[in-house]
Length: 116
Image (cartoon, rainbow, N blue to C red):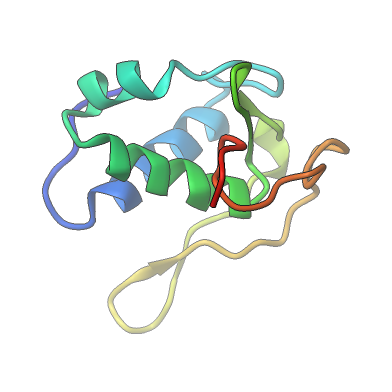
């Protein structure tokens, strides 16, 4: 399901893998992701890299992270942003989708609720 990332901006690879799993229906709304520690082992990256990926996915309103409770998927496969060619040889992920009603409730600073 998940695999080790290739070296570039590793957090971007993690973001793409999670988005792909949501899009394929392998991760569904309400599903809990593995812990940060487990994700570092799965992806073979640092905890900082995993946190950056979680922060990015949270800012896209795809995940909700609660300290001591875990990280959860907020969206269903049918409402994901779609990758598009940016015309510069890269890909973009527009934010045009409908987030889960719980998205954005008290999310400030650290993605898992710690101090900024």
